[in-house]
Length: 184
Image (cartoon, rainbow, N blue to C red; front, side, top):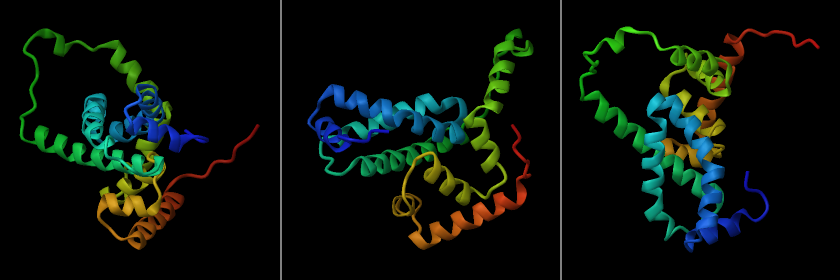
């Protein structure tokens, strides 16, 4: 996380400093991808590029902190996810007519196995059984590292409603997840 000097980095990025923009990208992009992988899966990189393209014109007139920039990025990301669902919801799914669709690809099996043991797999497993609005709040709070007010603004709810949804979600997870003792 950009700790000391993060506001200077944001200021330099606003002024067009390429090194500062690259620094912000390195800091914020992994969080963005974790969020997008949950929502759009294999399209996360493409949607992430669209988010950065949407953020770029707004950066020149940006006047906030790193937390405000993160909130703006996730606001744009949420909109791009909705756009993605609209676009692909209207298209029928297709499959190629060659015989490659019939063959199993070993790398896909490996990728699925690795994803199940990674942090991304753990996040997906946690929010899988949650209602969409609660899952969204948990993802923005945990992956986006946004505060309650920022999440409330993004999802269009009051801060109190976000706190209550988060509390209910944590209670639900506590009751449903098995507790296992950790041994050395």
